[in-house]
Length: 196
Image (cartoon, rainbow, N blue to C red):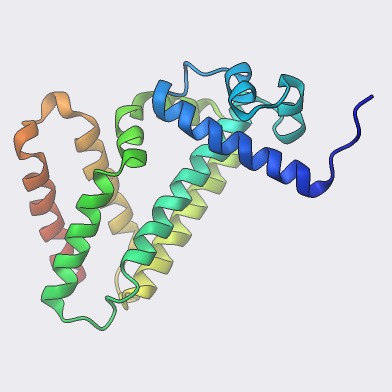
């Protein structure tokens, strides 16, 4: 009988599963990977997967949550020096950061796999979906505080980002050569609202 893993070993195993799983979903999408694929990539037995996650759905939810949170952290790091910057510099930096993020491979994955992810989230446990929504709202509020925009409504930024995200995820109806320019014009409108 194999020995029981220590809490540190269990945490390391879970981290490895998430790390390898992220690579797999970026490469193949969330529908095409299995628990077998994830366990094999992490170098563990399939049964050990269930020591960290109750199901593939719980694994996918935690992975999507983690990717989402990492994107917010990237934004917050990107704007740390902007609170007291002149308006023109703040505008330019925010626009460049958002355009960079929309070209990030992780965000590109979310855009390309939008329908699959949306379908997964809609059928997943409503409690955990609420947790993701709360995390997103908390991060937008923190971002506004960091930028000194406490007098503005972070929910408007959240909706705005979702509108841009929706448009970018439906490239079939867009003129792709003008997508970045269109996003930039939309960002100007948002920055005007924020009075940046």
